[in-house]
Length: 166
Image (cartoon, rainbow, N blue to C red; front, top):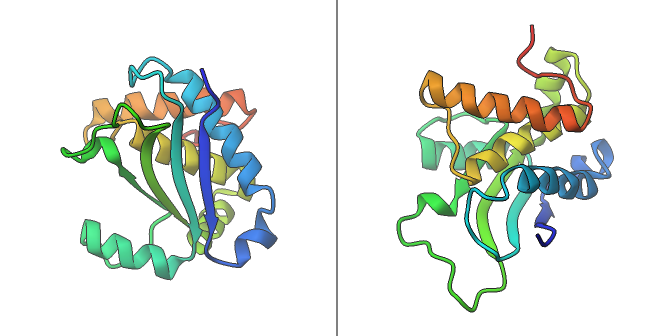
C-alpha cells in the first residue's frame, strides 16, 4: 500500500506556534488510519485527504452553511464518498477522500477542559475526521459505538488514552 498523502494548509497563524509539527503528526495519523482501514475502499490507488487548520470564525461560517449551526465546532469533514457524483477516474493518480477543516480555538478550549495535550486532542479529532471521510458516522448508537471503538484502537497505537473514558 502506498503511503497516504495529507494535503495540509495552515490558514490561522496560531497553529504554527501551538502545534508546529502538525503536518508530520497529521501524516502519521493518516497512515495509521489508512493501514487500519486498508480494505474498506477496495482501491489500489494511493489515498489523499485535505486538512485546513483554521480558526473558529472560518469553521463557524462552514458549520452554518452546511449544517445549519451558527457556531464553531472542532472539525468538519466533507467526504467525497457522500457525493453521489464522485467517482475516481481510472487515470487519477490518487483516491481523494475529501476535505476537513479544524478550528484552533475550539481545539485549545476542549483540550483544556478535558485536561489533555493539544497534540493528543489534535490526533483524536483528525482520526475522527478521517473516519468520516471513510464513510463512518455516529448518528445512531450502533454507528457511534463502531466509530468510537475504531478511534480508541487507533489512538491506542499512538499511546493516546481513550478519549471517551471518564
